[in-house]
Image 1 (cartoon, one colour):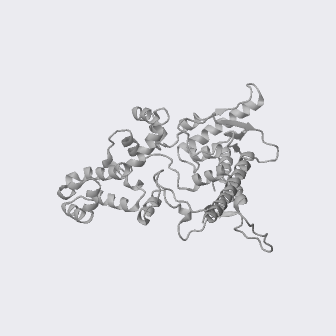
Image 2 (cartoon, one colour):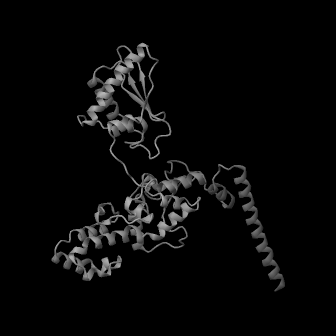
Image 3 (cartoon, helix red, strand yellow):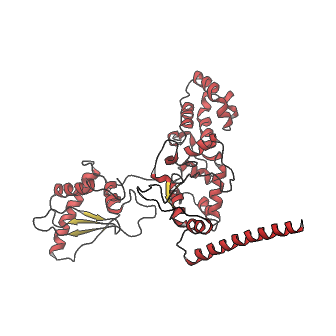
Length: 383
């Protein structure tokens, strides 16, 4: 019995030594070549046999991994949610990405096995779900301890179509008959939203009931995620406390307050790169800018299909002015038309510069070539 125990111990030690040696090799390889990927090092260390090279037709799936992502609501969640919760998460931008839904075939579901950890992390961030670009203004105010007027909340922005239709049903309640039908059909659901008084409510209380339901859905129901967000910001020098105490000042940073560009606001974005005064170039540049002003008048008066947003995208690649402005002021520069050549205006989105031809004295001429440049371009990573 003693010999058997000793043999078993020796075999166990031998296996563990091989494991630790393999781990040490992987560690040294990773340390020696930081750009290498963990997958390749680990597989090359532990795999006993490699596939023989295939001949003939190439295998299109070779070197790629079919990824199935699932984005959870909580950072410390250890189990997948039930199927009904999974569907709800997907509707809210979490769960299974749209390109991985059943019946959908997309290249976005595959990654290269040669990816580094940094590249794979970027893939997860880019494909794990839609990016939340801005908070709803009402939600932002609630997070800051304010009490917005939710009676006027636009329920069409709610991501869940079922909740949208129920909220609209509440808004459409105008008569005693409507209220009776609402209590019968949606009374239990409204009660679960924190309004148990729905069954004894009157028509005059419908706006308040609607606001309670909206507050429950956009704020109270998501309280855990909201707390995670605010606690995370407070981890950096109590940043959220600063936002909360100055919520009006931070409103443009956290919500989408996009307003249409006007001629004056559009002109204020740019600087002009004129030639020195007294030169022939300067005189022709001023002629072009005069025509440019007239084109901007056409846009402001809506006498053309061209818009200020079209021009901004063409010049900078951005469809709106950033909250804190552009890092460098976009500019308008000039070029000289070669004889016998019709060269259209062009832009550099990296330098945020629009180049216009010198010596354009006719408003319509500048409008036509500018409109052609904008409308015939591919756009900045936009198709």
